[in-house]
Length: 266
Ligand SMILES: Nc1ncnc2c1ncn2[C@@H]1O[C@H](COP(=O)(O)OP(=O)(O)O)[C@@H](O)[C@H]1O
Ligand SMILES: [Mg+2]
Image (tube, rainbow, N blue to C red; front, side, top):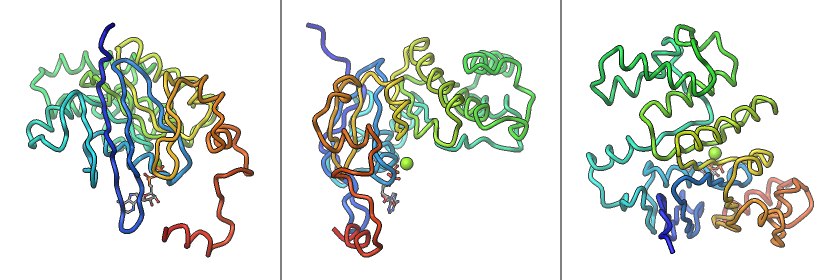
């Protein structure tokens, strides 16, 4: 049997902020080429987990391996080398408003490579074409819609040909049609460029349209990890409630301030 090619591995990762345990022993594996979705309610620790997976936050205990490297063991140079192989797409497109679209996309290439200007221009054209923005180089971010800005952010994130792309709530704040376009783009990019993708979202429609596998984060644990079909059939009441978006179930919604404060103290 062929060995699974694991590109991300989290082993029993824990993290507290003050007294609060945010990640309570998370273990997961992401294989090369797959689209792995991390879902869960707001504030459950999805972005925190993502920041651990890219080495931006060290765990209190446990380990993260990225592309075979134990992140805790790397010096700054080695960490930089790993970071060049990953791309991040944040919730806000985080474009520089004073730069053109082309300048925004070329930024990582200008910072991290010695490619000649005309080569960089060609790469930028290709990346913009991949995200459906052919010929947009000269526009300013302020001239673009929210969905277009997001796509420029994506073009910039793939400028350096990453092996792994990380997305934090890529469809948040977009209307359903534009969200669908972004989902399709994430899928296209992973297929066309054979990129491994890790997507954090609470958008159930996204989950089922893009995921090869899904993990649900709840109270610091990865509750259910499996293919979307398995998750849909899950007997776990927390998972069922999350998928159906029902207010009734084991997941608590705090309607009293004191209940909420007590929960925070736990
Ligand atoms: N640097 C930090 N210091 C203290 N608390 C934090 C920090 N970052 C996040 N938190 C808290 O940890 C919890 C999880 O946050 P986050 O990972 O952003 O959740 P999600 O992305 O699932 O909405 C939240 O309650 C948040 O307020
Ligand atoms: Mg978040």
